[in-house]
Length: 259
Image 1: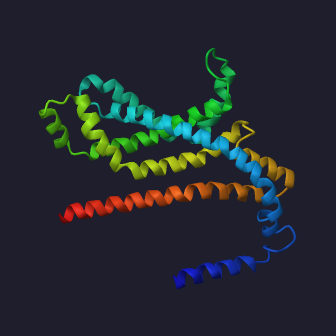
Image 2: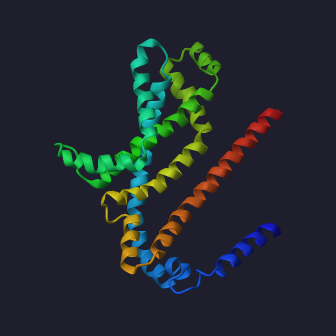
């Protein structure tokens, strides 16, 4: 504790006493202006409501689509080879493309096609883009969880008369999801942060876009600091919850090993 306090105290003193900290137009005024922080925070919080809607909607879609994709990859037998190839190709494609590029392609490209029956909303296509990208990552997490369940459990379930679908639903998936819950939550923390990319395709009521507008209005970077604090405030409880889940799982495994 003493060493930690000393380290941060020395770092704070070094930063505050640096030549560019308190100089006119320096870091203190450019990034930590209290008046601008108080004025910009309400607008940023109002825009953050859209971010919450975006990542909450995308999370639900990702959970469903990624599970279906992982099941497709785990289907046995040559008859399901086309589905496995399709699932693997999807995973490779969207894990290899930057998220921002997918958002640009869908956010600008799909409305330009003017297809009948499809929404032209920038927010809609941003949600679809995030869903496509994160489905590829979360499907790999699901797949690892499914493969971690020993085949003998599925064989035992089949010997009791359960069908392949019932075995997957009642035996394999409950254990798989429970084992991969921490990495799933980590992926959703990343999804929450990537919701800020929505503003890049012209959504003006989004928090990142609001911070950019305020920064240009004040000629000051404090709105970005305010936005960063909002994201950190939301993220820290989730990170602590994930760490608690990991430690709880470790304790259970150690207790199981002892018994």
